[in-house]
Length: 444
Image (cartoon, rainbow, N blue to C red; front, side):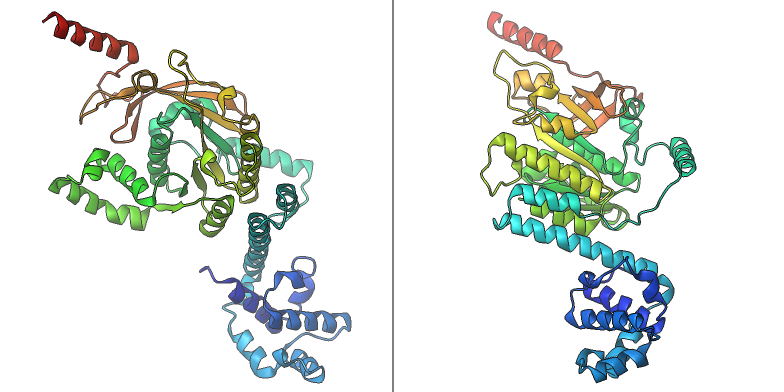
């Protein structure tokens, strides 16, 4: 069914009841007067209630007659006829009600978020509203038999989502991930977090998942440069220096149809939690990637601990309420020289709640970049050695995954991919090579 506006769906729901008055009895308790924003539809909905209480059949004649007797101009016969005519099909009433309830839910959450931004309510009040406002899903009482059969069905199906083929080792450890899961990707600055999510985005789009990237750091164009670099194996710096060759341009143009018409991909720039909620509500993705936590603007000027605790909680609640799998990037403080080591969960900046809220945690470690910092890479060089450490998994299993990483293309290659025969560049081998060159230079 084609998406229609809030005002239109209110009109269609009223029209369905005018066409088939017995529907009113079936929707009692499912929708209320507060689900309508248009004053005219509220008045007509109240008329339905009055007629029902008096055991009068609800149809266009009885409603218009009630409106005439009570001087309710919005219930004139001409207006009611126009409302009736707007209904595509009465048989889709269940879908119309779901849409109406979804608009109500989004309206409550967005209003609360805006009030929080304007300082009209405190963070705790916002949290309470989000917790108390239930998403518009039908509540169904399940028997133990229902639960067992559903558990069996889910066990046969596995998780809702799998990682792309080049991250098969992550699937072996985690089994994939589900809707509503919060997956934290942590690491030191400039250590591959955004590049990892670029490669995941490309892979998820190839699996036909609906992907939304919310960037609080890069522009949407910068994000697209990375996707094009990944898919077409074009060094990102060629975009930045403006020296694309003709073959690059042809390859990029050939990708327009795939990215624009086949992929379910959107990227938006955000600054506040309100922006994030609005984007998730508008695009309704399967998977959302938020880059990154520490960049979310804080109107309250809270301490780092309080700010990150609040935002992590809100993002987790959004993920569950919207039934969206969420990847949240989080940055560690840069380690002091001489104290560089593999990251741990307790390195998360400012708040232990980041670790507590996550279903899955990935920590990235690019040793050579951290210890050498300035790396000069050219096309077709050997890949970098990258570790993805699965330090938390809600179902228990954790472990380390070794990857081959081409930062100039934002490409991640499976360690066991026999198509890539190149050897990784590790810090120790790079250090030895660098020392050898220095020795030859000075001895020469």
